[in-house]
Length: 175
Image 1 (cartoon, rainbow, N blue to C red):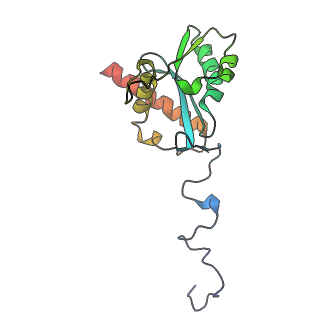
Image 2 (image 1 turned 180 degrees about the horizontal axis):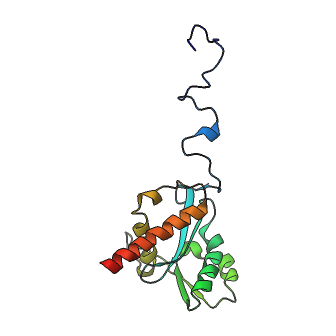
Image 3 (image 1 turned 135 degrees about the vertical axis):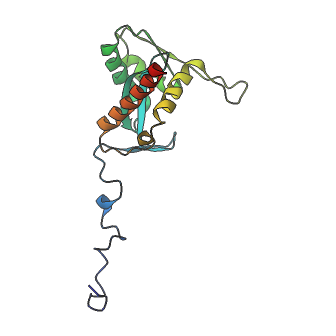
């Protein structure tokens, strides 16, 4: 409709340059909840994983960023124990320390050991047991699809993380 015919008080609601509502945003509607973690400066989701000493994923979980890691760690460990009953010792960083997780793991045949950082000398230091999970996350994040959270369902994000880990393991086998 030409400008001269269109009423002056009518907004440009049909124009593609003006957002109509919040649901018309570019990324679409998110079905699973997302949050913001002020400590890690992350908006969206976080991936929690349980890996073996070689860095192969045993269990992966996607949670909203506003949920603490230690709050969902008990469920992740219980699911991993169902598939891997020989699992005896789990190394974790200081974020998993606390009475809530320790009480949730009472009665399970697994020992949780918190690997703490010593800041006596200062600077960056590689902690042997904690570096394994960081290395695994860097392998998984090499996939462009996993650099940002594009999926509306956390279940799909977990599936893509598992596919990325499968690709890492197949690359090692074929050498």
